[in-house]
Length: 218
Image (cartoon, rainbow, N blue to C red; front, top):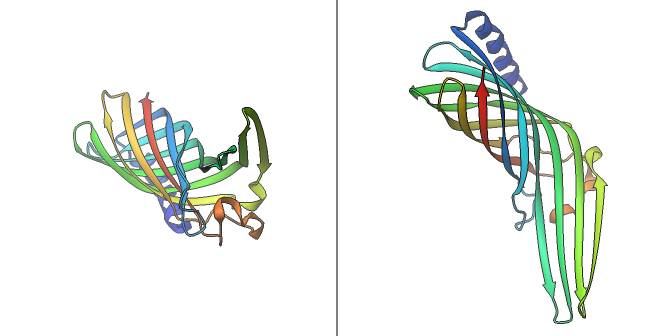
């Protein structure tokens, strides 16, 4: 995957020298992320995050272009559990909040004017990672709550490789909408100390992110 990404960067450099048109832009939107793999319990759910950043579209022809981007991306997953024994109601929620600087390089095909398909590799650099556990207990009408946040960056790999696929539509030469799916190729866990979170029995877990974005090209 490293060779694929480096090759994509080389194509970007070549493309800039031979581009018919070059545009810069910004994009922002929502992430719907989770973790997948043998290391993740069955009840893990998607959580909503945010992504935003800049892009450069290198257009070779009316149908083909290349688009490298730099994005800040909030990812992760969550799980929740409720127990009621008739006396005490207990609600537990656990979240893994991961923040990445992602650098996708997307190859874009415009089969018809305005509409495009895209695919390409992505490398992500982990900048922050926290585990947050919240417990709410109600006994005899008395409610108590507890929240604990733990820094887990030291237990995760700092570099994450993914592959992206998506589609989009250019409303005008400037305004566009985009939907993208990013599936991780890298096991995010890097230390046995992380065993036990989300019912983990080994260290196989990968990022999985659906993104919906609105963007503007200058």
